[in-house]
Length: 413
Image (tube, rainbow, N blue to C red; front, top):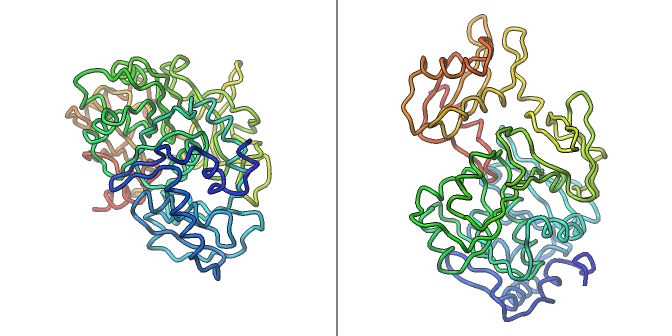
């Protein structure tokens, strides 16, 4: 039966082999039958007096159980982000077809609450699972809360295919590798910055991993080669997507080059148009209440092959004393320097001039003068940061995006 033929996600899981392992997290494990049984108990005991419920559980298993219990009922589940737990939200009008709420990461301020109907995900599972190589034989390792919409989507997509989830909240790469070995994991889902931690802790290659799925950050040929050196039998898929839409484009490791702007070809059923470098998306798999084609305020262009290039957000263009500077270009120039692991750029008005401030995490010790000299090889003088703040690592939110509020605090401290 097609995924879209079920009335909700709980009914979808009830049709799977009930004795098969569905989920193993830090504290417990569940077969499909146990997930269905526990979620059904929660559903039967629930109070449906409110139109929506915020799920504040820290346990991944409990987040999933409550989501399954409420999704498709009169009370829509919303898994709260860490940021949103300290914010007041007015739920407001809920679209009639909505089965759940999802939250944006809120990297520059307050999280946004969006609504999805069942079919906006379920009808796309066949296509995303085809591209990602997910099926009933998949044993996937994932890390992090289901408040990150990318995690929730992948978890439900794998369960829809009848696969097995090996998950943890712990940020311990050695522990991740132990779980992969212990449970014969054959697929990984991690954002690039987390993936790139793994080779540092591996003494021998892992030949069991067949698929690596990643997104939310850029990845190029250099990073792909480092991963392929330790996961020699894998295929890497990097996607570009958004909470408001779904998956938009993807690129495989064999197609990755030194040009990190390339983010691939559209998923089947997704249309892309460009107007004045602004990317517009046409897809049936979107949140409720938006008009199509929809703009995420991202910039880019489509090349002669029909592949999308990402040039940053429209608000990533900094006006430095009357000249436009792309913070993405400056950030890429920084991370292309040997030993620089992470970088971010902010624009500030200081005195009578606009300046760029760079935040840099590196394994090699650099002075400001050394970095400026290296950056001159790819940047114009007006594109060079005037201030460098060196940090151990850049703070990120649950979706893996750099937390710009934290950067501002560092700048002021």
